[in-house]
Each structure stands twice: as structure tokens, then as C-alpha cells.
Length: 419
Image 1 (cartoon, rainbow, N blue to C red):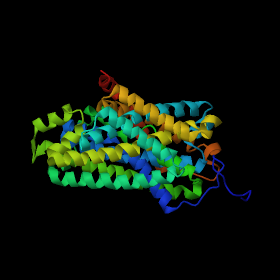
Image 2 (cartoon, rainbow, N blue to C red; image 1 turned 180 degrees about the vertical axis):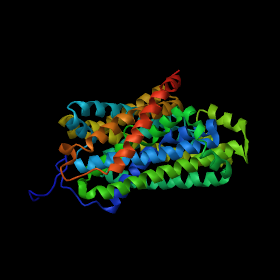
Image 3 (cartoon, rainbow, N blue to C red; image 1 turned 120 degrees about the vertical axis):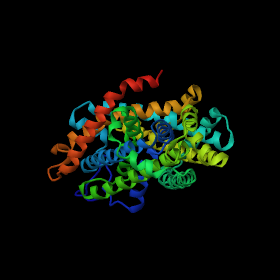
Image 4 (spheres, rainbow, N blue to C red; image 1 turned 60 degrees about the vertical axis):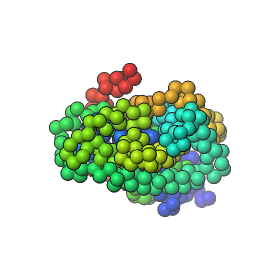
């Protein structure tokens, strides 16, 4: 290797990004978002808010793109992981960020394991605790394989296709009222009543570890530097558009069960809200037992890929804090999954935990995004030659302000979730 070749923070040569690696990172990020919490949150909120939820979904997609564009750009131009960027911005801040994201990732991963168990239950009637153990074992098997990261890319791509096809089929079957959806998209006066919804959906889309899952995956592949920033921004668009499309289709599928034309079906909506597995109940109402089992496959696909994404990214935050963690990264990932599995098997109640985890990670996003925005104009971090686009910075500040305001306003509502 020439002395002039740029290196990443992991002492790897900066590589030219291949299409398959970029595609895999985009779908790892998308599948980290499209977890059991994503499905549960969208289903329950659709049954609560009806057609006007589309307004929040579209807002969250735009905020998701803006936040991740800023975050990924800074990570790649600086050639440092997010926690290292934070430490360079303010010594000790990286440790705080790493621990915060890892805790948020653990909360999600406990729910993700439970989500796989709910999927097994819907498909085969398997006991939830037994399903949780099986889910944990599957996640561990991926990581003990020497080609774990390659497998992770392929699994994320395949499972994204499974979920997209399944949700599309049920959305068509349920026949949602598109006219009411169009009206809901401009019901701006309802936004002040939906702060918990905004924070939770945003947290489930790009909160906590999710915003960094694909970025850290590409860093591990040796891809970094300002010469690659255009490629990684396209990767962000691919991932967010994938998760956004699935959320919209899921919203339409559930809305079709709650409305007949312009008439609200309160019985179906109440049944979805009260169900221990809201999305599964929506699929059952839309397509009978076949829909219920199709959702089981969907939930399994979302859950197992999210178990992988949450464990990988959470440990990627911790491993630069001490050489011991970096040296035994695979063992730490296995322990992370095993602890999540054990906790889920003891606690149970996956659906409620998934809502809480989304809300908590939504509160984390303004902190991590704020750090990246401050770093984007710090020449010691991004270098003398890179200039972060002003439009991206301004939009990032707007997203930060909305996320922070919605988060503060949603705290009382989030506290009620713990009751």
C-alpha cells in the first residue's frame, strides 16, 4: 500500500464503492428501520388516527432523508465513526453518544427478538418464548459465520423484497379509500395532536442506531472520503425510499381494514388497537387467516434482519471505545443478541416494548443529528477542502428543531406508555 493512499479510521485503504456493497448498506439501513416496531407502530397509529396519519408519514420520510444525508456525509468525509466524530468535537461526547445509541439499540433489539417470536406464532402457532429463543439462535448463527457481513447484505436484500411484496398484496386486498388519504395529506391542523406519533415514527425510521447502520457497514468495507460522498448519498435515498414505500403500503393496508369508503369502521380499528399484535390483526381482518400467516412471514423477515442490524451497529459504536471490544467484536455481537433474547423471554409483551423503543430512539435522534450538524462545518473533522452543502445544513437544522420540539412535547405521552 502506498503511503499516499488514504486510510479510514479503521486503518483500511479507502475503497472505490461497488454497487453491491452500496446496495447492501442501503438495504441494511432500510431493514434496520423496517423492524417489528416499524410494523407495529404504523399499524396501531393508523387505527388511532386514520387517513390523516399519511401527513405524518410523509413528513417523517422527508425528515429521515434529511437527517441521514447529513449524518452519512459527515461520517464519510471525516473517515471516522459517529462516536469518534463526537469525541473530536468535544472530548468525552463520543462515549456519551456511543452508550446512548447502544442502549437505544438494545431496547429495539429486545423488541426485535420478540417480533420474530410473534412472526413464528402467526405462522406456526409457536409459543412466544420458544420463538424468542429460536430468533436469538438465528441471529447468532449469522454472526459466527466467517462471512457474516456478506450474508448480512444478502439477507437484508432478500427480506426487503419479501416484506415489500407481502405488504403490497395485502394493501391491494384491503382496498383503502385513496380519496380520504389525499384529504388526510393536507390536514395540517391535526399536527399538534400527533407529537408522540411523530417522535415514535421518526425514532422507528432513523432514531438511535438506525441512522448509522448502513454508514458503519460501509466504513467496515473501507469506503470513506469526500470522493465517495455522492455515492453514499444515493445509498441513503435508496434505503429511505425503500422503508418509506413499505410504511406507506402498510398504512394503506391497515387503513383499508378501518374504513369502507369514507365510513370509519370503529369495530375493526378498536380490534387492531387492542390486539397484542396490532399489525397481525390488521392483516387478518384484511385477508383472513391467509393474511394473518402472510403477516407472520413479514414480521419474521423484518424481525430477523433488525436483530442483525441492531446488534451490528450497536457494537460498532462500542468497539472503538476500547481495543478489547474491537478485538472480540463478533463475541460481543453474540452476547448482545443473547442478552436481548434472554430479556425478551423473561419480560414478554413485545408489542408495547416496540412502541416504547421507537419513542425513546426518537428522543435520541436530535442529539446525534445535532452533533453531526456541528461537525459538518468543523474543518478539523471534515477537512479544509470539504464544504458541507448549505441547503443540507439548513434542512438538517429544521429537522433537528422539529424533532427536538416534538420530542419535548411528546414526553408526557411517552411516560404514559410505561404505565
